[in-house]
Image (cartoon, rainbow, N blue to C red):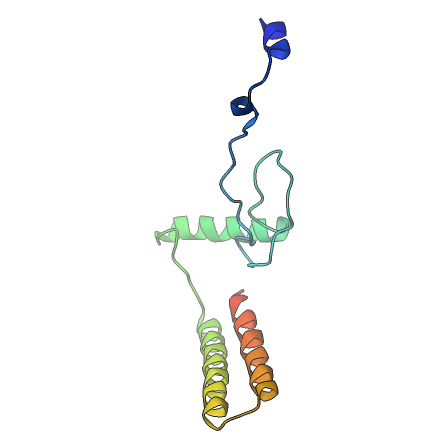
Length: 127
C-alpha cells in the first residue's frame, strides 16, 4: 500500500502544505526578538534557558498565590521606574509637537522623532 502512495502521480492540490500559524516573534519573558526557527519541532517561546526558568518561576508563584495567569505583578520600584519611562516618552512627544508648532526644520523634527522612537523601544523592555 505504501509503495502505491509513493509512486502515485501528484496533483497540484497535494503539493500544498498547510501553513502553521505564525510563531511568536518575541521572547515570552524578556521580549527580545526570537531567532527565525526551522520548520521542525515545537516553536520557541523563550530566547534562552534563563528566560524559560524565570517564566516557570512566575507561573508557579502565580498558581500558589491564586492570581490569574495573565496578572502582572510589579514592585513599587518597578512601578516608579515604569512611570518615569512613560513620563520621558510623553515629554519627547510633547517636544515634537512644540517643535512642529514653532516651524522646526525637518532635520530637527527627525532628530526628535528618533529620540521618541528610542524611548518607546526602551519602554518595550519591561523586564
